[in-house]
Length: 243
Image (cartoon, rainbow, N blue to C red; front, side, top):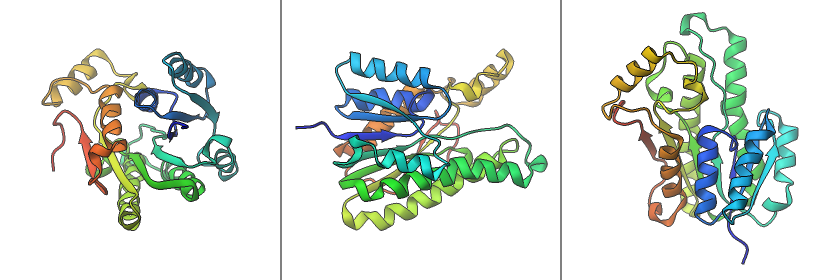
């Protein structure tokens, strides 16, 4: 029998790459998308294939409905999507009181509307007990003085995903949200040593999270171990944010 399929947007770097490799290890075929650079995505696919699983990297601008339609037409998705991970996104540092409508619209277009477009295109192809995992953020709940547009987009994702979870629940499909804290990805790459130490000290566990920390939770949410979990926001932040 053909292995189940996981589609992961933004699966070529950071958190998305870690999730792609973890779900491949769990026995999924992985169709990952990337937007600007094929090299990291192809490297992830190479690792997946070398480990004995099937992987494919597909260029998609998730905010472009025409490109998303091509994703829905990919031959791998024709027999159904078992796991859909909405992970792509962008983050620009800008103070809340300096934000202009154009910047807000661009971020919402990529982070929120892009996720909606991918779901809309693939929803007819979701299998009977499909699992959908939305990568949100703790900032989508508590806000951010230097990333109001990002926080707004992630907050919208949270609310939309929870609404979708309630709609899908009677059908047996599940939708959950992972809200990462500070994770060691390109978003933190510009930190000075001092800023890095400040981040670590702000976390009760005294360390920055890794993409693998998020991938482990994604693996749980994709598995039958989480069969009675839906509409949940799972915080993965070392205890930094509690509510």
